[in-house]
Image (cartoon, rainbow, N blue to C red; front, side, top):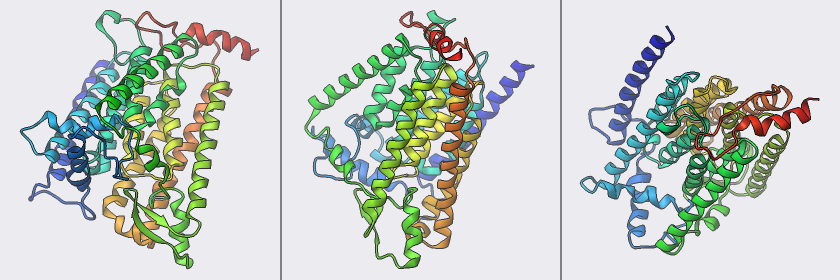
Amino acid sequence: MAGAHTARSTVGVGALWALTRAALLLLVFKVPWFWHLPGPDVTSDVSVIYHGWYEVLKTGTYPLTDVTWQYPPAAAFAILSPALLPFLGYASAFYVLACVCDAAGFALLLRAGTRPGRSTRGAWVWTAGIALLGPTAYARYDVMVTAVAVAALLAGIGGVRRRRAAGAAGRPRLMGGLAGLGALLKVWPVLLLLGTPRGRWTRLSWASAVMAGAAVVLVCALYGPGAFAFLTFQRDRGTEVESLGSLVFHVARHFGWQGQVLLNYGSVEFMGPYVSAVSDAALGLTVLGFGWLLWWRVRARVLTAATLCDAAFVAVLVFTTTSRVISPQYMLWLVGLAAVCLVVRESAMAPPAVLVLLATGVTLLEFPGGFGHVVASDAQGIALLAVRNGLLVAATVTGARRLWRRTVTGAVPGAAGPADGDGDGDGVSRDAAPDTRATAG
């Protein structure tokens, strides 16, 4: 019966993926007879901004004078990737490659979910979440980064493994290498390493991340100047109109606040009195959030396969929710990590995963459909932002509480996590057991 249910689920989610992705491609290719979303053109980032960077990168240098270039050096790989399909125009090639990365993430999740003890719920979350974000999912390179992050976490829990290791799980070196690559694509995948099992597993995965990152940095530095120009441009960003802190100014505009909404450093931001104070407060919240995550890491008694995914999901929730900028494509990060969590039946993240899916749906209503209302700070715009950001806050708090209760106050002595499938790690059970005995008594 279980096998039949899995087979039906696989067929159903595969059909839904194909149907929704066809719709996304029709939207980004702007097929005349198909439905068009209201609001700004979400594809202009690819056809104008990305294409402009592509032309600069082709000359052997990074966009040194373009303040909208705010990404780590390996982002150049994503921007240059349409060159792999020279028979297509730049934008068309980019959309096709985004769909290929989406398909790769889906296939990995589906394959992992059909294994004993796993669940196909992750493939359903991935399919629904990306569809709910609409064409923005294919008009940004974040789906490429998220696919790398999904592969990294699945390697960590044993969702990706070689045939010769058929009975084993968890590949720390592969996970670390993919996390290191992801961090050089868009920083946040480094947070995947937060919940790695203590001992040799952590040493192997973290060392692999450092080595992979160093190799990528070396390649990028040799490619051309300006690989780290993004650091200055990112530092100078303010409070973007969709962020949690922006709600202060959306409401304040109705009470005479003398600020403006302007395009600044590649995003639409508030400019005016007290903006720097709110931006600093957001940074302070991020620091406090990461301080809590480090405290959790010290206090956690057992780190299992579920913990590896759950901790990564909560960490990226903290990073996203407290950020000065919450662009619509950030939801892809959360959808991807929520999907991996739900592959593992023991995960505690089902409720926050549902909240993330709801927030993603509201994000589509807010951008592109309601973005004019957001910029105008009218009642509809404020309501959309309040609901979306409120759902993110609820997901963050719920996820953090469930992670703490599962691993700190409610940890099960002697619980075992992923074993090492490469023969190069100790697994979790031996590393975690001494720590558990020390605290359980």
